[in-house]
Image (cartoon, rainbow, N blue to C red; front, side):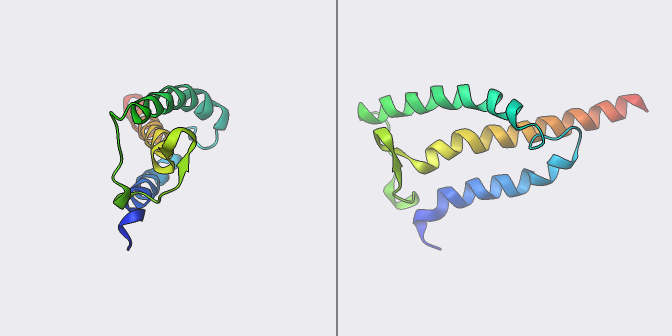
Length: 107
C-alpha cells in the first residue's frame, strides 16, 4: 500500500469498525438530518481553524501520508473527512452504548 493512502485507510477502518453499531437503537445513519445538525457546525469551525493554522504556517501535514488532494485554503481532503468521520463514529458508539445501557436498566 502506498503511504499516501494511510490517512484515508485509517478513516475507512474507523467507519468499518463502527458500522455494525448502526443496528443498535434508532440508528445514526437512519437519521441523516440529525447527523448533519450535530456534525456540520463543529466540522465547519475546525475546518476554519485548520485553514487559518495552515495559512499561518503553524500547522502542516506530512505529504507522505496524505493523498495530495487539497480543498480550498490548502486543507487536505483527509483532514476534512476526519472532521466528519470521527464524530460520526462517536455518534454511532454513543448511540449503541446508550441503547445497551437502557436495555440493561429495563431488566
